[in-house]
Picture 1 (cartoon, rainbow, N blue to C red):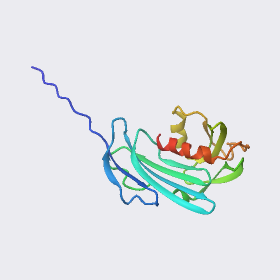
Picture 2: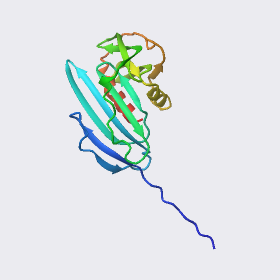
Picture 3: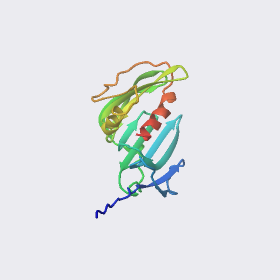
Length: 191
């Protein structure tokens, strides 16, 4: 007589919250759905026309990378892990980073010739191109290598990373980068 023992797969548990006021104080534990094998914590800081806002979020993710991304007016940091309730801590505030000596171009209106000082682990430059309502939009900035590596294995087109000061080239664009910035951040969140 043969006995077969079948072990049922155990689901990952992560903290979940969305704090649009800059706090994730109301986080709750949730069981991740099948295929979501990581826990993620995000902090996104925007500064537009002198007004700064901070959003924190935590949730289950299919895959993600720890690191940060900086487009000048929008900065994001992400912490990822793969054990139960490992995302208890908030991702670091990306606006509190110390300059690391790297520089990349960023877009400001229709020009992408402004120089951005990278901070923390942002050791690469990023360029992304996309279309929205028939208009082409370009974003440029600083990014951690880990986020570049995750973007290079995805199916998203128009994202490129490079290493070296100002390697992402200055170029004029036809539309404001804000059109592409929010979908790009949403893509990075879903990595």
